Length: 352
Image 1 (cartoon, one colour):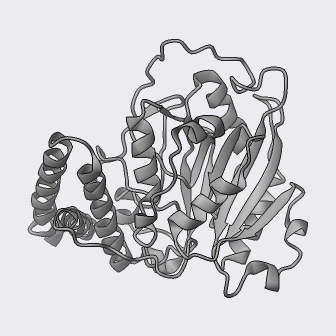
Image 2: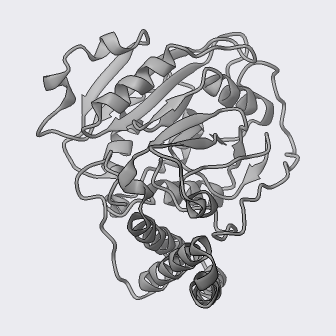
């Protein structure tokens, strides 16, 4: 899954909520085509950052060959693979990468380790002939209607960013707390719902408008994650919109090591830390005070979930521990303490 903070309004154990779509003034949707591609097929760059995960990448590339288009015209697609491993690049052990997909493939190495470096290398690789950039992670794979649904919502809403859901494929049957905490799934969404956050593991970004903002991923998030949450927060502050595409489904492999409570506690801490950093970077005192208040409230609720409620329900106790960890991460961000959990490369998620 992409390394993003959960939506700020969602608390662990309370269940996911989705916002109702909002009408946008001045939109002129073109049925079946993105608004800037009337009369021709869209040109789409599918960007994948990877780090020592050849099996996952191969599965993802194979899924791109199954894409179907019933809502929009079939776009012209090019796949960009950004390898974040200069020491053991994928092309040395798998020189036949183009054979893994029928789509045109552009393979590049980003030697600087880090999530933001790898994603920025993808942005830099995509030139001006492309209309939009679709990001998807190397431990995910796409359903056949994935890109069709992203493009259809883009055509209908003219939003700069379209967000798709990511559903987990667990290595083994999950425990109840795993499905309750919200770490393992992005969404579900109502189609066309306006969002106040975004995640780069499954999204479509308007290329021309992104270039106009001159925004990129912040390298200070290289080893902590949350670089996508930060970018999308800045995009929203520029007055742009993020809209959900319910049917643009991708699936993510969840290995056994990420199904442990210890992993969830580290991830909760990191997500809380990211939200704290986003509040600190927001103008004015209100976002900071609001985030501190939420952290304190979550801390108190988490403590109650651990004891006494955790004595009755193991699942409730686990959620409580994660809420406590999340809150401590937020509070730590306000003290200036840094987090570094992705030290091995852009594709490494097990530690996070």
